[in-house]
Image (cartoon, rainbow, N blue to C red; front, side, top):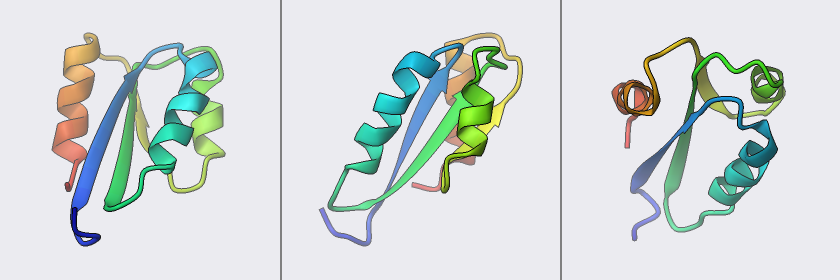
Length: 81
């Protein structure tokens, strides 16, 4: 894979803070391409949004949606890779 390639990783989430930190660390550890991580949150109430706001470089949106499939589609519209 060329270092010039851009890969978009879209993570849908809802009240998943306990797992989210590990998911984001795993994405951050990826090498060999420019990685764009977009997290689409369904208006979580477990501290997810506060954690995302404090995470540098994290691209995210948090709003109510109709579930995982709508969240992934939102992320795809935001993606550049």
